[in-house]
Each structure stands twice: as structure tokens, then as C-alpha cells.
Image 1 (cartoon, one colour):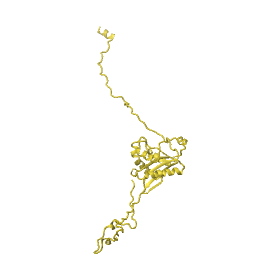
Image 2 (cartoon, helix red, strand yellow):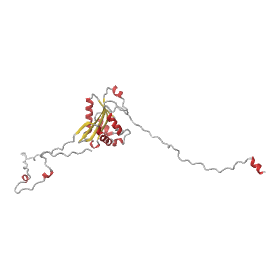
Image 3 (tube, one colour):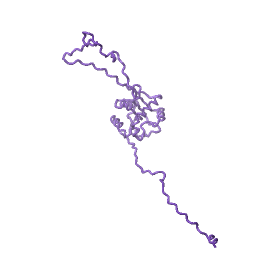
Length: 252
């Protein structure tokens, strides 16, 4: 969560204690007793203009490259940022594990950018200049045939408490700047179709659907692996043993 910076007291700014009215001296107007000159009425009879209050300083967002000591903080940030999305999607919208995230940091050709306000992470962007990774399903020939030189946006996350404050727009502007610097003419990313908030946000920024990879499911009537209990027939009465010729001879 971003910490709020307490504005520093500037020169000439009164502290709360100094704003308490002092006792009036005998025979002195109230304005002079407070040490303030009486407001002069405007020449045209209008009320005197009020002094504008100084606006509070706006938060300053900073972008930098991620380093090794940031891995733990960024991983916790991603889990928080994608928590609600991952609960509703089949495919994870972030790396599958902490170990995989550490492996990504070691890979060449991947940019990992942190956006911070007062030292707190408010956004994270991960991009690559070519198709990388053993778990990547992207077909490079698709872009070659269409003269597309893309910057692949692998991750873009904004802290939930900073939505709607221009953080995502600044991150996207930074990614567009990287693409221009490296001579790339497209930004390419993947987003879940049921992530309506993200889809709407990207469409407003001229992103268009390239292809469709849809996960489909059909119900199946299941059967237990083991058969249920079954009644066995009642036990039959024992039949008398068969008679033999030797038994007849014994009787005679």
C-alpha cells in the first residue's frame, strides 16, 4: 500500500498553534489585534478576493529497472495484483511460481520495470524484444509475414489501490517509448477474454484482437472407479452326499 507523504512546512506557512487568536488589546480594532491589516473594500463594491490555498503536492511516479533484491517484493506485489483475476481464469496471469519468476530475471532480452511512488511499488511491467522462454506458445512467423516487429508485453500489473489514477497510462507510455527506441512498430500482449476490465482498457488504447485461443469444456457423466456394493444370493441348503455302490454292499 502506498504511503502518504506528509507535506513539509514551507517558509511562511503557519503552524496550527500560531493560528489561535490572541486576546484583543483595549482600544485596538480586532484586525490589528490579530496582527493582520483590515481588508480594504474593493473600489467597485465587490467582495475582496480570497487568497487561494496552496495545493498539496501531487504524488510523483518513478520508473526504474528491477534488480535482484526486488524479486521478493515484486513477487508479493504480483500475487496481490492478480489475486482476483487468477481466481476467475483458467490460465495464470502471472508466473506460475516464485522459482519461475527468478528464472525469468536471469533470462536475456527481458526488461522488468518497476513503477514506484514514495518507494512503494504501484505497477510492474515485463516485456521482451523477441519470443523467448521454453513455455512460450507464440508463433514468430505470424508477425514476420505481416511485417510486424513487436515488443511483447509479458506482464503489466497495477496495484488495485492505484487503479484510475494514471499509473497504467504512464506504464503503457513507457512501453511505447521502449518500442520506439528499439525500432519496434507494435505492442503485443495476451489478456484473458473474461477479464472485461482489462479488455476495455486496452481497446481504448487502440489494441485489437489478433487471434483467439479459447479454452472450452464439456460436461462428462462420471462413473466411480470401484463398483458399488452388490447383494449376493442367499446361501443354498447343503445337499446330501451322493450314495455309492460300496454303501449298498455294507448294508447287505
